[in-house]
Length: 271
Image (cartoon, rainbow, N blue to C red; front, side, top):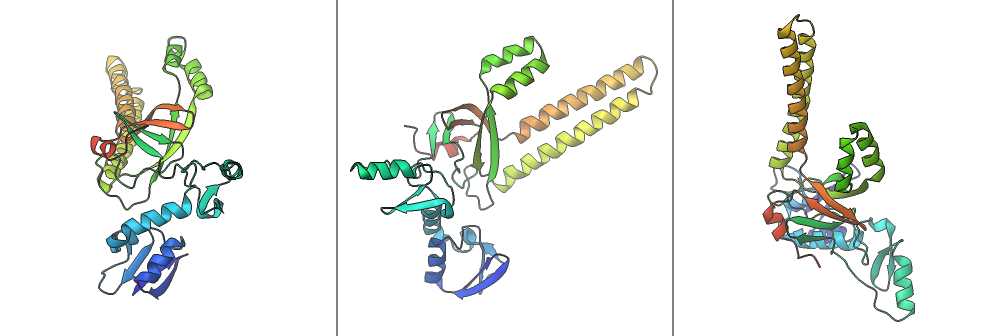
């Protein structure tokens, strides 16, 4: 018999069949903590009952995903039409297609593809629950990555003025977001990179402040050392913590850089 947590309260006991029914209804998610006799501690359902994993993923996708556009919008934002669950944006298309006797275009689960050296995904899609870098299974929650892109020709504005470039880049950039999974090891690398960047930046500022109190050439070199430490820390922290970036954003599609070979090869080829 199983016990599960919901709204901060313990519920149960329920048997295997009832547990699977709760998954279908969306009451239990893949990361819902569960426990049964013989377990040392509470675990996410993914880990506690691997044999339910396929059913869990399938039912979660069906109950939360629009059958037409494939976007995960939540069960409460879907309308059931002829054995399909569609979002408000796709409802007119589905209704009109059925009125005209046409087949409703169904793209369920077609949200992420392998496009050579990059990953192609729909904007706001949730990538498979595997580490983007090493492709191992992940049970932690996804990281929502906000992505920005502008045309490379805009970099030429840097020749005029960095300030003008920043303004033009902000105005012209395109935005997108993806829910991306990282394993514990790569999450740790990202965390240490961010922490190292901040600590190095603070150290650089301290060195610069100390150099200003030193008279002569020595003070100049100390300030220069501090400035270089600050710059190197910012660049290194940004480079090692930026686990994914957009190569292109266009027409609600995102071409994502940074995915490992194993992760890309596990995806279906881009149409």
